[in-house]
Image (cartoon, rainbow, N blue to C red):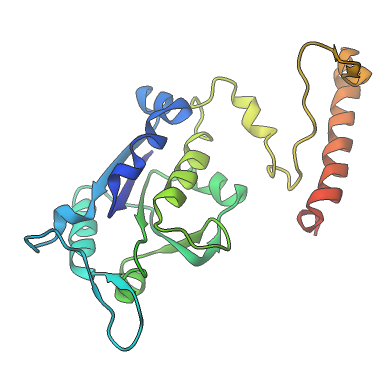
Length: 224
């Protein structure tokens, strides 16, 4: 899988994309994550990529020309399954979306910035708009990192224990059950006896019951 991330501030992406599972996935050749500076595609001598909005809107708007040049340049090299824009009014990013995207080959993620992007980009170049929550960030870089992390970790071979991803929160529209580790007792606080029994069937039943109860208590909306 190849993910091209288009950013006005590419430096924000250096650390999150080059550690842990993302680093290992890239080292194994399972994922290729390429960050592009939109400023490299502007003709402005000062590398300016924003301008005032037409009308009476406040704030600066990312211009259409450099973004169009960058996307066109990338599309000349390969086909893309999706061109995604990180937008607070896009569809909500969740585990199901991450699962489906992990099956794609090539995607572009355009990070919003300032007041947003020229709407013509959304009308003619973007195939999908995605939000990571009902709040506004300074830029879409953090959202792009969240999406990339959630997608790449699902690629077979990216995680040391592939079965671990199958039991993550939200995979079955349930929260994950409680987990414990050694020691079995600490300060009088004990690990549930069932987990020490070695009975796999009973443990699986317990985990499902706990996941269901936690979901009912903390996120009942998931059960609808």
